[in-house]
Length: 477
Image (cartoon, rainbow, N blue to C red):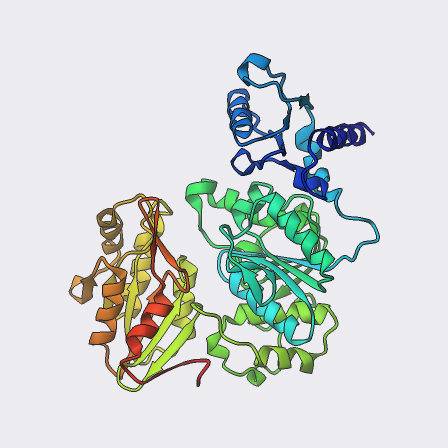
């Protein structure tokens, strides 16, 4: 009852002091950086000083009022705009977003996908598979958001909570059958998906990543598993040790299914029968296909129908994208940037040919994995080209030194700082018996360096170079 009263008080304050937009959620924001003129700012910062700083920032952006959990002296905000002190606002602000959704409104099936590797590929390939069966699919992902395949570029893998809810509202209005949301560990941890109940959660895998943010593997795993507290049914990769060994009983979801490449008597494991019926298997991560098969089975699609969808999938740009040439061998472009992703891509391709790998490591991120990744590259590659990735604010030389610690034979290493020149060198020196991996950036359009975006796309640049040679992409084959 107390929370209902708080919700009513906050709602009335917002409606009284902002007339911006048709919906309640158009009239407020919890991020002072994205306040629009005549919006209410809801300050959730638990630190008093930071709270006041954010309020003043919101006022400078045109806020027409604010809600705060603190008693704020008027002289510290230097403004006469109205404000509401509501100590429990943190507990009820999500309900303000949900107020826009009517009881009898169309409700799509919502699918949340998280994991260290493969969540974007799984999201996009699942959207393809469902769209092929004439289903209308809304999607929020690092590749963009919208009704598939017409996506608008995103700044985040998982956008801020207000943007997530605005897309949800849009998908309901457009009567989407399914909504797929790519859920990052930061997005889950920071509450960007709070209040959204998933019909299904999919956890592709969990391996060490983003330790610079989460501080420990345990914290990272717990952030990912938060999704199991807000779903009806969960589909989990049984082959991932970090998932196999968790105590599922600690989480809200009790309806759990698994996927696995291995034979098992576990009745909760959904496997693909007659896997040989899948075409171009090496062009996709098998676990993405297993997840698609499992979800469509749970959604009562018949097995032949699921195979039809999977066999008509188009490979994704920058994700295991294959270019074959007559004289320069084959080139594979992929986003691989984690230890497991590097292991998987070498294991999943026929490596009877000589291997050349072009890669770098990101700056200001998990420094420990640089040596581990370079050991994997060294183990499989007869030639190595080290170049820039997203160095961010870290010096390339420092990143390079960390990478070189994992390589035993430095004679096979070529260091080319410019990524464009590195790709050009790879093509020029390649031969018909070589398999070339270009890893780390995939289809991204920028390299991040010194807080700037430098325009570059591995896929586009490679295509331009290969125009001088006879080549085919996997879509052409």
